[in-house]
Image 1 (spheres, rainbow, N blue to C red):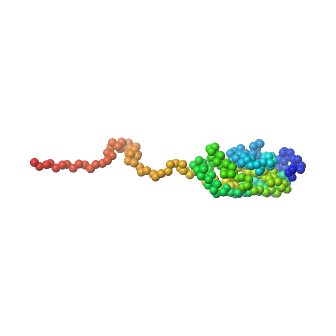
Image 2 (cartoon, rainbow, N blue to C red):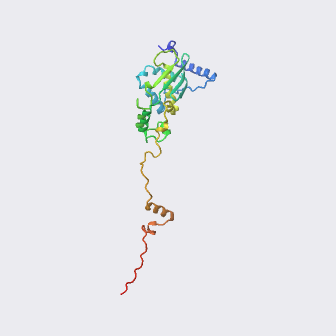
Length: 253
């Protein structure tokens, strides 16, 4: 049994407790960035949903994730901040617990492969962050192991609570809280994995056929001059100018 479960607390009471904890921390002047969930869904947009779905793929996390969902929905994650490679959070339980999640950077070779596979497919950062991508691109970015999301071995976490389980529910709540935060600020995923989202965006004209520029032909010049002067250049000027014939001298008898 979890440490916080020795005394049963209803969801409503847990929410009130979290609200009191937030108020107390704010009174002490602590700047907070809580996770606020409206309704039952933790994430609504592509990146938030993709993060949460990735978590649920891993059997390593299966036992603790349900309690984490309950905690994050009830406002227990009273502060969550994402910086390069690290998530620092405060979670309200029997008391306020400190959680730290460390996520390794995307390996350079994997990131290069992702960028290569996406070349010419993503035309703007806005489209990328809004998840307005083809099904093929979304599947590539979300691939287990070779995609953008971390695997269990790329995540290390600690919590100040007395629970000695591999993953306590406070950590699970924070992992879901990351998904909720990405729902509103998807660019933080790239910050967390220490990669540049600009690398995924194709350069202007990258998909166009490349080749040496052809010189302007006389026909193109003729067309431009015709429009400029309102005359038919092809009739007014012969295409090839020939020198005038010199008159032949009369032959003497």
